[in-house]
Amino acid sequence: MPNATVLEKKQKQVAELAEKISGAVAGVLVDYKGISVADDTALRKELRENGVEYIVVKNTIIRRAIAGTSVEGMQSVLEGTTAIAISKEDHTAAARILGKYADSHDNFKIKSGFLDGEVIDTATIDSLAKLPSKEVLLATVLSAFQAPIAAFARAVQAIVDKDGAEDAAE
Image 1 (cartoon, one colour):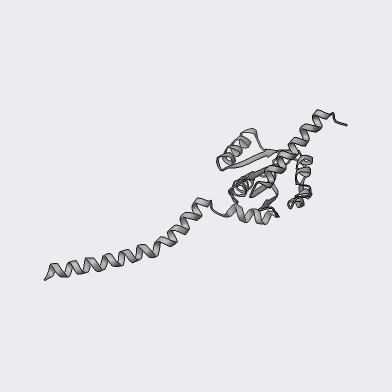
Image 2: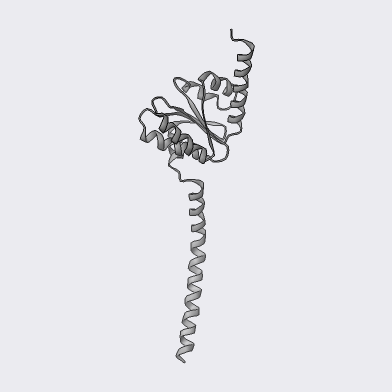
């Protein structure tokens, strides 16, 4: 039986992870076995720059942190090496970055994930990974709104230019 200090430390880890998961909008579980330190460092840097927290944690800690929650269904994939990427604001960042990384590294596998407190499968994670970033989506929407206004402004300007040309001809 572990001593009280070790037990207290593990209980604290479980509580902290449970809090992070409950405060996140999205998360992805991965099997990181076989990646190099350099690749891992680059991956962590990219995740950090996009507001995603990446944690390597024991399966038993994750299992206890998600027990009794809406994401408890992820327990079935908790085997082997496991890391969790948690995003508090961006629904697609973790899936997009880890999906791209998994495509280029054979040993790196996506296991499961969650979105707004619901467990999602790897097909859904793949779909999220293919979505553009929030900034790109916003720019696309804004350009769609701006196009009719710009066309109207060009039409008005053409009328003004035509009237100006007729006045000059007289």
